[in-house]
Image (cartoon, rainbow, N blue to C red; front, side, top):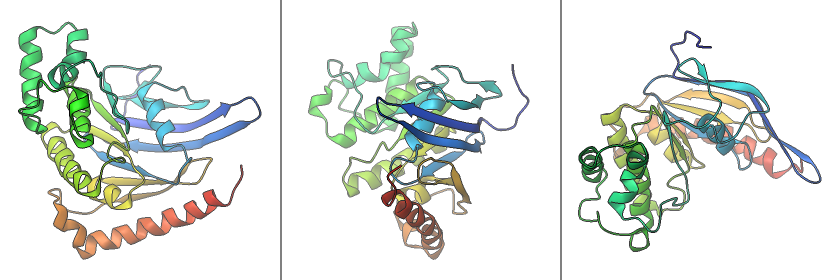
Length: 265
């Protein structure tokens, strides 16, 4: 059933309980928020609060215990080509070259060689991979591997891009470059993006909206509208407006991190 909505994604009272051999763990407890078309949403919270679980439910890789997720008014019941996901780990096919990795989904979808080449050429240029087309993942740095992973996800033209701490393993300098690169790609593609991160600076720098989650069981603690210029460069992180928003977010996160560190549930 399709519901009329102006929101691209609706997370509606989503709860998730994981059952182990000895106990149950409630990861999410009636988490609810919405994402507008072409919005860049960052999600912050202490470790174990269910941030990644939310992304997996939106991706259709996990089912909610209760609640639902809607995409364009339709309930998500499994994976689909309308969603692309980029993980923190480098989930590239080691036996494929950079170009072949980017074109993998297009090949599976039955696209012609010409179509595949046109799309991969575009993202090879946009993501800064020119000259590395025939390299294998083993020959690439961490930052380059994530460029390929982002290009591969975008090549399939998903409506929603889900990113689970994709820059978490990178050094500070590479991380900054990747943040600016991602904003450049987003500005061109106008994709709807849900981006999970532990890094407050990253959440403020990238996001239109920040959702702060509570300690487990995770729910939405606060929504923060990031009122900063659309064109963002590293210098923005030194401005009073950026620092003001960062302080607000850090106060919220610190409180939840203390709760998470002092609970055994």
